[in-house]
Each structure stands twice: as structure tokens, then as C-alpha cells.
Image (cartoon, rainbow, N blue to C red; front, side):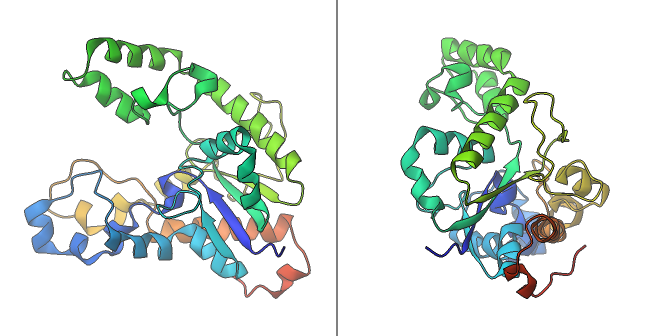
Length: 285
């Protein structure tokens, strides 16, 4: 089977969320913004899909290599095998049938480390259907007086139990097990939200080859902050006399271009083949 796909597993940063704010006309219309402002999180509407899928860094990487994008966060992906890089590792380990979707995948790029979720049964032993998902949702759940008191107590206990170093350690173990199981697939980690030590003491692993080189930055978020490449840095909705609830800290289109250039450059430098020599050559930022 021809390996003509790149699989991307990550959070909303990999999905392309926020790009609709940058490009969709209504979010750049003065009258609309004065009347409505931005109430985040925005509803995910069909009209937004074009902007997510055409400007996000996974699309730019696949265009460069003339390969097919398999983004596990897409609302229409089949199967929907994660909305988080580490969740992807959990899913692949819990259901071996999912391995069939790697048969035509040449590269897997995982946005790392990701965020703590309620679905981490191995860490917390909770029924995820009873609880919110993200840390922010958990806090909102606790602060909402309409929720059952005992359920709110359980949420507080979960936060108290949350062990991020152990979470990362288990995720890295699963990563290397998956990499060992699928030897014909090239895996790599994209350090996005937190600095990632290449000689990680948590898992005692050395993953220099798998870590995407960010040219001196410890994480993508570091680059976005230093170079003002967040949505809130450049988009009209956050830089005028308009109301908004939160600043959208996803990458803007320039940030996505920079991320894509780092992933492309890493593949060329670390996994060069004769086939790669035919690539057209992205303008590296």
C-alpha cells in the first residue's frame, strides 16, 4: 500500500481554531463586531471549515510534500480518533483495530504534550461521561452553583489528584511503544504549549530525533508570544473598540506558516530520502 498520508494528532492548535476569526468576513466586519463582539468559545459553524482546513500548518506541510492530510481533530474525520495528541496515544493503545488507519500513513506528527483530560482512566479511574473535559471546564463546573454538590466535590478531588509529571511520563511510554509497534511509520513530536526537555527526566527517554527543531525556541507558544503571532495580536476583533470575553491565543496564519516551516525542515533534515529531493521547497521562516 502506498504511504501517501501524514497524520496529525493534536489540540485545537492543530485543528486550526481561531483562523476563522482572522479570515471570515463577519469577524472582520466593523458593524457586526460593534453589535455582537466576540463571545468565546465561538460556535463551530460550517462556514468556518474552509479557513481551518486551508490555512492551518498541517495543510501547509502536506502541500509541501504533496501528501494527504489526516487530521484526527477534524469534525468529519473517519474515524474520530482523538482531539488531543496524547489522547491519540491512549486511543491507539486501547483499540488495536485503529492500527489499520496507519497502513497508508508515512509520517505521524503529534502536538505535545497536550492537556490533562477527564478521560485519563489509567491516572484517575473516573467515568469521563460524568465530568467535564478540559481544566477550564472543570473549574467552571466547580464554580457553578447549579451543579450537584457531591459531583462538584468529586471534581475538586480530581484536580487534587491531577499529576502532570506522571501524565507526561505515561504518555511518553505509550509513544515509544507505539513507535516500536509501527516501525514503518515515522513519528515525531511537536513541542507546543510547554518547554520540553530533550533528555526528559520524567520518562528517562532521549527523543532528539523525534522532536521537531524549533530553531532555539523551547516551544511553539514561546515563538508565538515573542513574535506576536497569536490571533489576539493581529486580528481586528481584539484590536479595536469591540467587546470580547477572552483573548484567542491560537496561532494566526503567520504563526501557522512558521510551524509548518519547522516541521517541513525537520522532515527534510532528519528523514531525508531520494523522494524528498523532489520537493518544491518551502520558504523557511
